[in-house]
Image 1: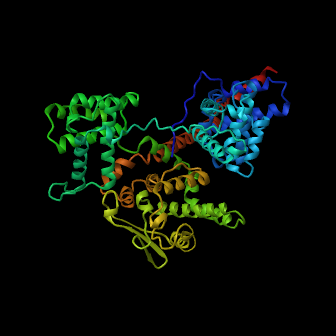
Image 2 (image 1 turned 30 degrees about the vertical axis):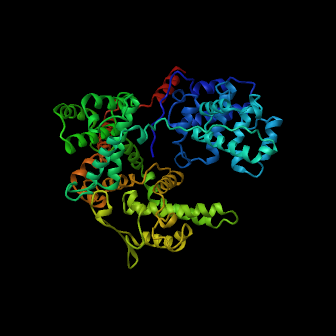
Image 3 (image 1 turned 90 degrees about the vertical axis):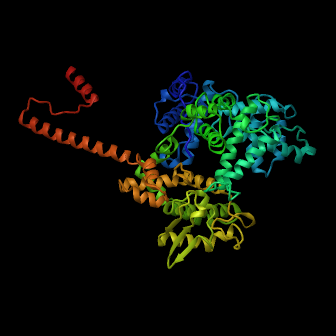
Amino acid sequence: MTTPKPIYDPELPSLADLRRQIEARHDLPLLRRRDITSAIRTLAGWFKLPEENVPASAKYIRDMLARVHVITANVSPRRIQNVRSLVLSAMREVGVSTKLAPYGFPLTAEWDSLRQMLSGNTYAQTELSRFMRFCSARGIAPNMVSDTISHEFLAAIDAESLIANPRTRHQSMCRVWNQMATEHGQAGWPLLRLRVPRYDERQYRIGSDLVSAAIKNDIDTYLAHLAGTDIFAGLPKPFRPKSLKAVEGHLWRYISALHHAGMDLRSTPSFDALLVPNVLKRGLSWHLDRNGQQTSKYIGEIAWSLRCYAVKYRAPSSETAAFFVEFMPKLRKQQSGLSPKNVTAMAQFDDPASVERFLLLPQSLWNLALAKSKTTGARTPRHVAQLLVQSAVAIEILQFAPMRIENLNKLRLDQHLIWQSKRLRIVIPADEVKNGQSLDFLLTEVTAARVGRYIEEWRCLFMPKANPFLFPGRNGKAKDQTALRRQIEKALWDEGAIRLTPHQFRHAAAKIMLDARPGHYEVVRKLLGHKSMVTTYSHYAGAETQAAVELYADVISNHRRTSVARQVTKTRRTPKLHPELFIDPLSLMSKARGARK
């Protein structure tokens, strides 16, 4: 998955400022200064930015480093670690970083005695070592630890460290501290428990106890109507469970917004009473305030769900109907084509090297898994190998059969997989697909052989053979969908340097196809199972933009080459004309110096 690029703050000192200060530190050994300045230049090079435009801020560098991969940077993991360490040491040398102690900072005697209690527990040592150094450097004894100290530690690692997800690491530190207090309390570990923070500021849904029974009954009745529970009164085409859950969520988000806006909902006579213009403005304004007075996809969907209830399910007043007519176009922005997030993800495939890594990734994962499975000793490498093989199979299926993650996750050996000689056909009936279009994919012999080997040799290592799912989970069920999605995303990034979600495989399939065969929208429509060509064209009409830009660039380049050839020909005939049509400024400077001599 792609994340927004961090924004440069010109008020902060830059890497160029940091490098100049290090170069002026003659108290540091010459070799040390050279290593640090080299690391600073290397870091800016990885970011594809001038040193002057990279702030000497751990937060900024941490976010940017999350985009750097050993494959695209063409370096070893060790080199990235060394650059990180040298840049952090430079920040400490010039005073930009003052709160966190360096890695080798000695622990006080009290903290060292606690560290010895962690002998053999690698996880606990990892999670607590940074906190122990932090406290030792600040003269904080173990029995002085408190939630205040814990919060100061969080602020320090957030501002001055390059570790990923400082909040998560802080939560882990608190949990491990409490666990050690339970396990080693009698041996001298301080019996102080730290509060494990919860970062749920974006969660605002209220409980049903804060809403009147009439509101809940209206919502339940409406959802039953959408589900087609009553054949004679429901919709001709009932909503699917996932769509019902989405509508229910939108309605409750609106109700929760009214509660947080100060409205008492425990005595409200009905949900209909909340769908009058002044109340609608109050609830939707709360959402807009949270989003910087700008609408969003989710705010638009909330407004649309309210409109469907009021206009299609009920008989609204003229004021309510006029409200939706006036404000729906402002709240629910219609967007054609791919979203900005998907456009950014697809831009990766403008690079032929990325396309090559992507298409060869299943084989690379399989080879890596075989290498790890031969590791003797601990169980962990074997378990990692199993996950790599499973990821390889899932990615290869998505490459040749770009289905939605819900369908991939629920593939069954006894229902969806049909073997035809040496090939495998995946058939998913229409009632299991989001848009009601059946899917039918005939995989190549190579892919079928890989899936078959996975089924015979690897699948049973996860769960009992009796489990019917291709990707098995516990209790005879399919693997947790979120776990499978994250597993695929992790394999793509760790081994392929590609940020992609399982659903974006569908967009990638369209882009790769249209880049190779421009204009083949009907092929893409059939491949992705779209009902209408309108859907395909509206999504991917811009997928060939890069190819068009490159074609135009070729036209310009050809014109230039023709012009240059023509000018060279004229130059040979007329010696007075200067033969250098594109003059390098540096060459001009060198010629000027030569003339002065």
